[in-house]
Image (cartoon, rainbow, N blue to C red; front, side, top):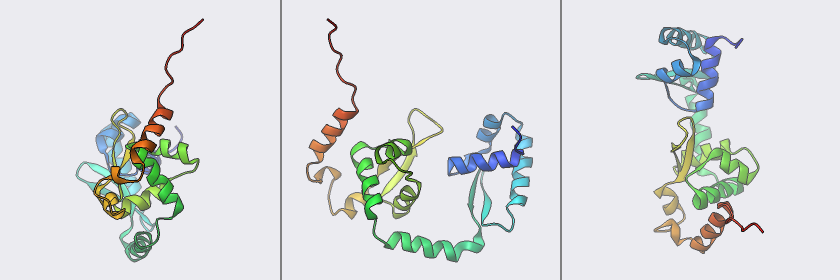
Length: 183
């Protein structure tokens, strides 16, 4: 690959969207730990004076916002938390409620649009949470939280009107059809 190692790490950290163990970077990039650590230092230097910083958390690293942008981030965060969920949020929540835990790709397939911003807003509000994908260590799934149930004023998510019927119909649509006899 023609990109410098620091740029490759930056891309991986953006793709992962959270803290990544250095060991995982070593394995993904097929280089030594010393090379990864040197490239992380280069990346740290390259990010100085920009809105993004390299964050270290023990043996894990992530990209985060620069401390100088705290006031801006807080004002946008406040707007995200206090504003209406909106149609995109409700559609995304519906997919997670009835099909969750579900991957971002599956949500985007159902909705037909990119849902990154909507997921971020729902995560920040505490209405959904991101969990590890059971069969793909590189991916995540999203599921509802107890805060979502409370947000809707329910005791259980199954108290939604027609929950069992809608869920059963959606599950039937996702199941492969039964085998047919060949004649």
